[in-house]
Image 1 (cartoon, rainbow, N blue to C red):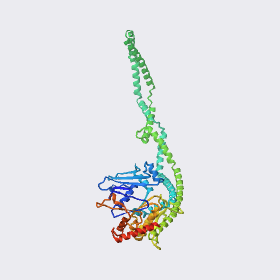
Image 2: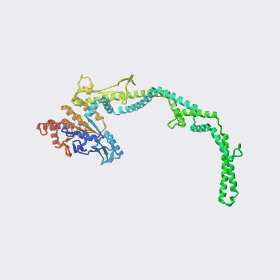
Image 3: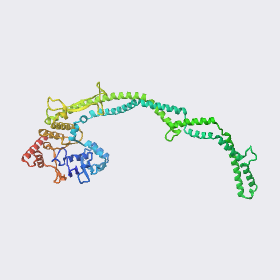
Image 4: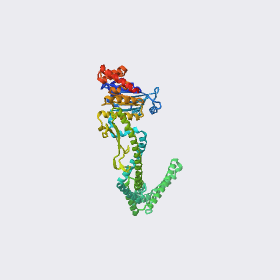
Length: 577
């Protein structure tokens, strides 16, 4: 892994190897940046404050050697990555402005892909993880992961039923709590639909009635105008002496016809006068027919106005933004469908109630199955942690799991009890510690001293790590607060874990570092930075000096060196067993 411009690190290369790698260094030398760098490669949050002062960006690059059958390889290839001689190159860039970029196998990818790959690559265990594991919810999660498919399979089915139950219960609650509102809505709809149905409106009817009302309201004036126009065109029988347009047009045509053969232009005008005569006769006839058909019917006018009033009332109440009768008709159609839905609520409530009862029974069965699997896994997990504690100088300590349920009248039935339930089942899980014979088991946060707590949490981490299928484990100073013989046993347990996986440990304990297959030290230069040569792989002589510094604070102390050599020899003997 190459790190550039991250925190105090200017430019450094961290060479990790199979087995157990220890990372040490003075406080503030940059050991934490090694962990942070790996976190960035695994899709961790990009904090612009990590970028070294004066630099535009921080860059972390890693080369991963993977099993070709690993799901990580398949996922990377799916994202368009390319392998380099069977190895996968990954990188993460964080700018000082906070922008972040990720690359996998030479292809730019979302940062989320790094996090997805990281879940199958590295398990990180640090002091913050210890604090998280003190919370019961995290302890339940750790137990579930340790149990594996025995819990995961029934829990997945439980969560599916739980999700459906929540949906059904929410719908049922809405229907029942809003029953009064829905009944009022149904009554209003029913009244409105009956009002519209009684009127039987037809789209466009209002416009037609408006035209008819206008005609009937002015029938006398229209009839008089048509009669006068007819008399002007065709003559008035009551006044034979009056000159009408038809007579005058006939005179004009006779005058022109008499001489039309002398001039083609005049002949054409004569023809047009003939056309005018035919048109005038048609118009005169239509005017006579219009006057005869027009009936000043006050009864019909009253009926039309009454109908218009009814339709206007409907438009005001049920018309839309445009205020048309077509919108009233559309509202009635929509309202009918809604009323059918509301009238069917009682039947739907019965159906949902029956479905809710069925789901609650299924959920209770699955919750009991999950709980049984947790109890079985808890016994194995607790026994494994207790065995680890015996190796960590706590031979009489016993770890147990308290798995309980909380009574809740609104819960689900579990073996005759109504208990609270949630997305994780019905169990409350807590790790208890009895540090010595006769001691009452208590929650680990209350039942252990600082040093005991660190050992308990490390034992949990080691057992839990053994249940994790990932190939690499990173422990970040989880041995804090531990020393002496317990520290030696911690190193021994980590070395044992390293036989089946790659283990990287950032530590301040020489007893732990002595068990490492490879020892890296992080050193600052005089100006406070870590350069390429600042992360070194130590040879045997250099390891003695570093362990001496860690033991006595002096690299060249004869007593410290002797102690360091003895520690290394003891660690080699222990690893060889």
